[in-house]
Length: 106
Length: 106
DNA sequence: TTATCGTTTGGCCTTTTTACCAAATGTAAT
DNA sequence: ATTACATTTGGTAAAAAGGCCAAACGATAA
Image (cartoon, rainbow over all chains, first blue to last red; front, top):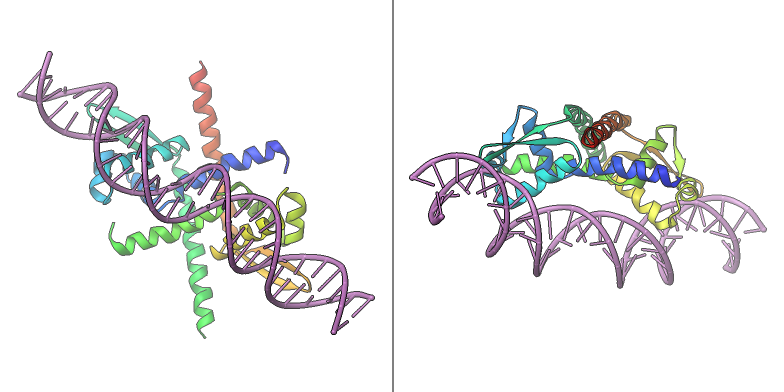
């Protein structure tokens, strides 16, 4: 891996890292159903307003979501919807793991 | 988010987290071309043997790769190849980010 | 203007992650 | 049995991530 390659993989990893948190993953999936304002998320998660805001800014920084301030509220939406395709595969990994576990039990 | 949902998202996040590191991401892509032994990775990355081994064990723990000890060497291979599909989307995010950047320049 | 609402930012502390070293393990060759 | 090789494990120190509080901000309402 040369320097340029390293930077490329760091950039890719950053995108994945942004999604690699339960709360952020959940948020991303919620946004698949359309935009949401920060306050909606705060209600549904049991977390501080500032915590939710910071999670959203991680997603934004990674380029996964974008924000739109309208009036007093800020609405977030998915910028690159394909991230949800990840989920099918992630679920396949989980199923595979479950199968492996089950096999060990026998 | 109830407790069960929380656990589900934690499990999914763990899979993503495993891939969310430049070195591990690179390794996963390398494995797309077929199995590799640990020593091969050590040569190509400028990192300690133990570091490489630990990264691989993170991938293994997540259920993304599996290992096969043959003789003195341990060979790793992709267990769930679909993880590579992630990459197309991740690249799309990066392209989208580049476009956003470019737009700002004008 | 002042007050209020929705959100972000800064600071601080705790937890997790990362990476190296050294020591332990297991396999194969001598 | 001893040695050498490939890998893993344990320990530890440094860096990054997570989450809460309080303070700052910007837009609207009074």
